[in-house]
Image (tube, rainbow, N blue to C red; front, top):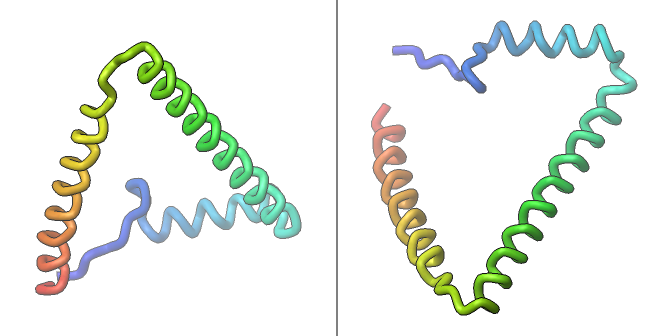
Length: 95
């Protein structure tokens, strides 16, 4: 059985067509600048969300709220993720 690789529900041919359209519209010289700008924007968004998360956690601790439950939930999610990766890894190897 042949398994086609998809990225965001886009097949290989559609992905190539999109890349070709981007090159034609923006030009090959501008693509690295656009990618750099997108990368910086994503990094700024991640930093801002981490700052907000830190402020909320700090405020909750100052007001005496119990924030240990979030750590417990994150630990459980990590365990489930690891178990799932172990399971899917063995399936992938068998194919």
